Amino acid sequence: AQSVTQPDIHITVSEGASLELRCNYSYGATPYLFWYVQSPGQGLQLLLKYFSGDTLVQGIKGFEAEFKRSQSSFNLRKPSVHWSDAAEYFCAVAPNSGNTPLVFGKGTRLSVIA
Amino acid sequence: EAQVTQNPRYLITVTGKKLTVTCSQNMNHEYMSWYRQDPGLGLRQIYYSMNVEVTDKGDVPEGYKVSRKEKRNFPLILESPSPNQTSLYFCASSQDGSYGYTFGSGTRLTVV
Image 1: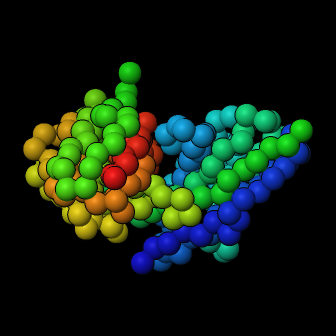
Image 2: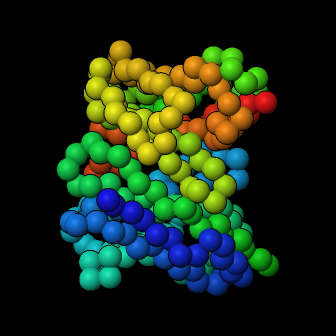
């Protein structure tokens, strides 16, 4: 069965520092890959997605993610974190065969300090 | 505006009292899904629907029912709610996985 692992439960970074959130998936083929963000008390917002082509994808709010097939990873990065980026981040995968269930990681909570 | 609308946003109920959480999307999406979110467990799928009259169980379907009589609506039914169903619930829809999934704003349910 497909699964998603986000190894870091909680990360704290200083404002202006760079950020990398890790995501590893387990699936036979290359699935569709997503990163969502959930601000406190809010729903989920799609940051970016990958389904084919260029392995470095750009998203909203200055985020990017790189798909590495050899490592089954899809890590999220941002060069300079802003205090408003404090939120919970979820990596998710879906088999690339049409409308199928989306499987989420358990999430990484990001705290930003001054 | 393209969106997934859930109602209510907040609900407190008592054990055993049947309730329905509604979900509606205006994007003509074929695929709809319900998730529950619990601390430390992330989001787990309850039920999903590939199209009208086609539904299937997700990872945690016990205690829930769904129906898909129309394309736009996918209500979640708790026939006899219990305290362990206290959670944050999200509805989502998608036309095709490659386009991503649109989520509703969530329904925070408390069962006492």
